[in-house]
Length: 448
Image (cartoon, rainbow, N blue to C red; front, side, top):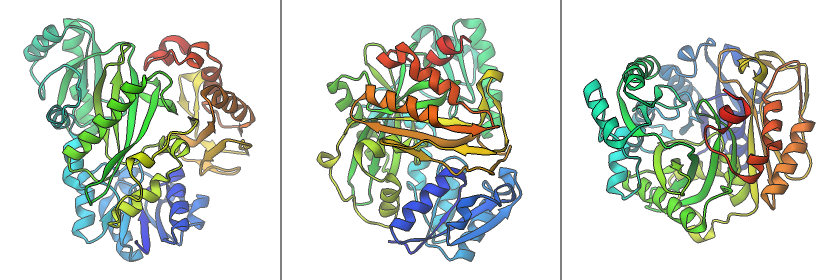
């Protein structure tokens, strides 16, 4: 086991990793930007190192400064959290070339699953269902039109190196395909410095269901069941739950087994998430692989009782998985709401600034992962999430009731948050029945 780890991230995930390390008797060093100099979690780490100014390029995305901090702190490993450099295969390779373990998958496996075109090819070899579409990159308009006519509209154009809804356009006819192709390529180039796009059949009214996987360096690989992340806005997740309220048992089993086949084929180790699109008939298709810990990992922890951060650290240190597939339970129902500093009434405009009043919820079945507190200043430079509210109860109906109570207790002022939208979701009859899809929030709740 490592004796000291550097945390190359910020906010609630940095605090989450610090806590896991403390329970494993591992010392921590955490990097921070000048915008985060007053973050309370810095005092919980054994060492805090400023690596630059607020812009991510000058701090959390600056590889040389992070490596220098790791060398100064004399750590054996770096945990990248999620976002920033977490899925950067070049960063993973640099860490290991400097004899610092990267707590994540091998860089070659990360590179393979990170390229959606290559990942789709690998999935076909592993007999994992994929969405009908182009066999590879598409950069020619005539080719795009031919593919769209073969698989039939609507289609979706996606950035090969993308994520978070960027470099993505839906087309319902030839005219919108031509425009969408150019727009997606330009957006992908701007966001990821890679204009490569591909085309797939657009599955309307589909659900987003993902599978948490773990694999060690001894060849053991398993799943920790699924999470349903269908409640989204602009491809950004709002609410996640486990188990999915609609999957038939045989579909759940095959979905999870498909995820394990894919990560085995990729030579993948550590934690990862295989994301699928599920249609109304419960046919499922691979979306992508996230080669890191996910924001929504707590819902899996709640239903399985397995600490995913600790498992990441154990695997990276060379230890085998301490349990087998048959030992992974799926107990009760967990729901997570992402609490963002955004104003739903103003088209989700960011709401940075100082939190004057902060009264978090509590009681049976309630967990809050957050780095915020009364007096905390939310910087405008980073993601707007200030916390993750998670509940775990014996049934889904009880979990929804618990979440409504917890959201009602949660008081943040004067910052605007997404709490009102989450309350609206929990009160919605279709959500309560589980009759939703990835477009439900915008189509029904926001009517946009």
